[in-house]
Structure formats: C-alpha cells, structure tokens
Length: 580
Image 1: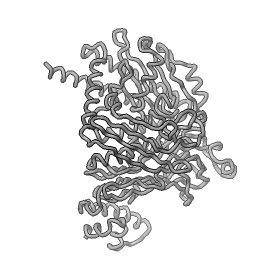
Image 2 (image 1 turned 90 degrees about the horizontal axis):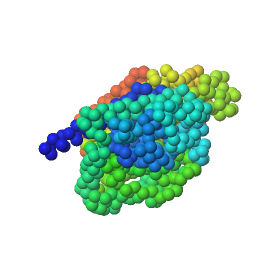
Image 3 (image 1 turned 60 degrees about the vertical axis):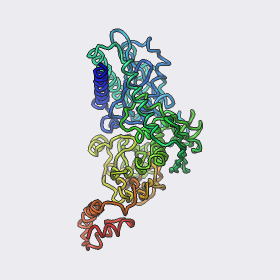
Image 4 (image 1 turned 180 degrees about the horizontal axis):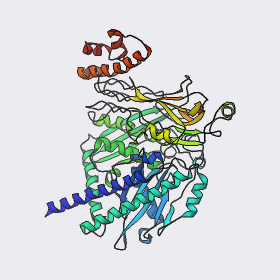
C-alpha cells in the first residue's frame, strides 16, 4: 500500500514538471522579444497557497527562479489568497521584492478548482526596455534605470489594467515588444493553471498542499543529508573583479556543522556608485544555486532545497544594497557567486568542484540612431542608422571539470542561450561580422578549460553605434584548479585596436566595429596528466584553424611551425611528443 502511495506521488510530481515546462514553453512560443523567444531569459514555477515553490520548469535561469521563489510571498502579503478572484493577475518588477532589476518582470496568476484558489502560477521574463537610461551600469540611482511597477493588478477578473499598460507604453522605447511580452506572460500562467487543474482532476485532489509539502520535505531532507556528508569546517574564498572604475572584492566564508551550511559575505566590497549592485534576493539565488550544483545536483529546485543554506551579506555591501542604489547590471556581479562558492566547496569536496569559468554573461546593449551616439560623432558621421535597441547574450567558457573538459561558449551559471546571428540581423541594422571560438583561451590542464568566443559587431553602412558594456574578467582570469592553468582574460576593443572599458556606455565610431574576446575557463589538474590522445586532438583542433588561416594568406607551414603554433607554452613539450 505504501509503495502505491509513493508511486502515486511520483506520478503527480512528473505531471507537475511536465505542466510547468509547458508553461515555460508557452511564453517562449508567444513572446515578442528575442531575449525570451530566442534566448530563454525566463523562469516559470508553481507555488502552493502559502507561496512556497513546489516545482519549477526545466527551462529558465537560476537567478530568476530562485529569486522568484522568495518573491511570491510578497504578493500574498499584499493580496491575501482568499481575496483573489478568477481572472486576477498580478505583477511587479521592484528589484528588492522580485528579481533584482527593473528589466525582470514577475507575473503571478492564481489557479482555481471547485471555486477555491488552489495554487499560484508565476513566471519572470527579461523585458529588453523598461525606460530610463536603458539596460546598463551607468546610472547613479535606481530611479534613473526605468519605471518601477509596485506589486499590483495586471488584470482584475479577466480585464487587463489598461491604466498600467498605457503608462508603460508611454515610458518605453519599444512599446510593441514590451506589451506583447506582458500578454505572453499572462498566457503562460493561464496554461500553467489549466494544466494544474487537470492534474487535480486526474488524481482526484482538491489542492496541491499535501503532495506539495511532501515534495518540499523530500527535497529539504535530501540537501541536508548531502550537507551532512561533507566534513564540518570553515572554508573561505575570495576573488577580485573588474568593478566599474575600481576593483570589487568578493569574500565568502562557508561554515558547515552537521546538516547546517552558512555562507557569510562579510568582508565584501561596499556598494558601487554605479549600477552593478546586487539586491539580497539575487545574492541568495545564485549563492544557493552554487551550493546545490555541488552538494545536491539531482535534487529538485523548490522551497525545500532553496531554503536550506543560510546566506548572509552585510547591508550596504555590493551584495546587499538598499534603495536608491542602482542595480540594472546586477548580473555582472551576481553571476560570479557560484565560482566564489565553488572555491569554498573545493576545500570540503576537492574531487567534485570544477575550475572557474567566465561566470557572468557578456551582454552588450546596442543602441543606434542620432541620439544614441556621442553628439560629435553623430554630427561628423556621413551616415546614421534608424533608432534601435537590442541586447545580445554571449558567453565565454566554463572551467575544466573533475572528469571532463570545460564547456566552450556555454552560459554558466545563467543558462541563457545565445541568439542566432540571423535573428539579430533580420530585425536590426546590426551586422555580426565574426563569430568563432577563441582558440587557446581555455586554461591547460588534465581537463582543459572551455573556450571563449570572438564576436565582431558593426552597423549597416559603417554607421556609428553605442554599447552599454557589462563585462568582467578583463584583467583577472578565471582560475585553474588543482594545478590547472588559468583561462584567458576578456578583451573589449574596436577593430582599429582602440581599447574600450569593460563597463559603461561608449560609442563605436563611424567605420569601426566592436570586437569582444570572451574569457576561457580555467584548467583542472596538471597539464602533464592530460591523456596523450586528448593532447593530440587539441593539437589537431588548433591546427585546423591555423591551416585555414595560412591557406587564406598563402603561407606555407612546416611541421615544426604547425606544432609550435598549435600549442600553448605550458603544453608544447607534451604536445610535440604526442604529435610525433
């Protein structure tokens, strides 16, 4: 009998995951903006009547979904569940109540079964433009960064709040895409609610409270048991990042006692004067993700697994800022937290933790038109583009792993996809002239770091354009682990060789292109321990690229030249032996 009950719960769990994944796919299929439909910058989940997350979609980003797991209780505080009505929809983009900056909007919809509210469906999507200065780190106060939507009705009993939509349309640059995304988010939750009710009907349930509590409890116990298997102790790690104008120090102290794990960021730099600050919700989201990746990678993400780790950050530090500090580009700091946490866990579980990777995504926000570039550039340029705003999501390599090479040009920890070149060029006057692996950028090791990539952007007819740079690891490389070498640092420049800053809005002049060389991941283990067959393949992979370039320029390479070109300094002797 007990086995049948467990089987029944497993079936309900499988149905829930399927339903919430369909919820997420609905917003992808119906969204207007490329950030959602092409890149998957979103999350979706189902919550019980208390606002606890029971299940999340497979598709989505940890920064969204883990912060959203904290956010939903704020909605319930303002709108008690017993006062919600069918057709009600709520929303907010308040950074301190939701997902950390104005561009991520959370939409919440109650589901009803037999006349009673039985659960909440929620999703968060990145809206490309929410007014103000636009997405970027240049603002000095959060008020400059866009329009703040407090927790409020997006729809009442099926009637859309036109006052809110009219206000938003008036304050953003691309009203069509913004409004379309809001309707897509509502449709997404409607599909999730429909599927939730069908599950209740299929299994004869009145709500998801009992089975939800079981799922949450099992996840909580699994994470605690996994923590208990780690040795008790205090483990510390710190790193330095580019910052906006001055380096940023991130420091973590992890304390493990039995099944309790605490991470304290005391000693971390104070808040920046620019928009790279992190609110506590986002800090918790990526900290917990980093812990669970190593401690319990197979444990479902829900209120049980998220709430086990105790995360602390000093109020006023860059990881726990107060209003009115700017937070628009908070990902460039927040997405570095898993690597920082990994450095602590590598001391407790040295054979389970990868080397450091590129970390934060490289997301240039492009803008074109007369008012988008420096005035003197606009006045002296023979051509200008039509007005446009577009963001591209790009990434470097991940660190080498305990049994595998790092992944090349893979977004970790964000999970957001890179948009196809064709999708960008079809909609905007932006041209991507080059997109290729950055050879040699992965750190050498028994398991090599993943490669970064090189991207070259220009505008039609050579027109000038501006970028809001939000990049990091341009002066301190991703570190190798256990003897692995560091990956390559990132480079931001024009094709004319002019170095650009890693953060802040800048103009690329007429006739020039933007070149981004993204960091590679650090290596894992000593390079001399690498399998000779893998070394040989490394050489061949490098030489394919070298031979193609040589053929293009009519250069004839000798065998010795080919071996030398194909190897990094640390690997040459080993590679030459393997190649011979």
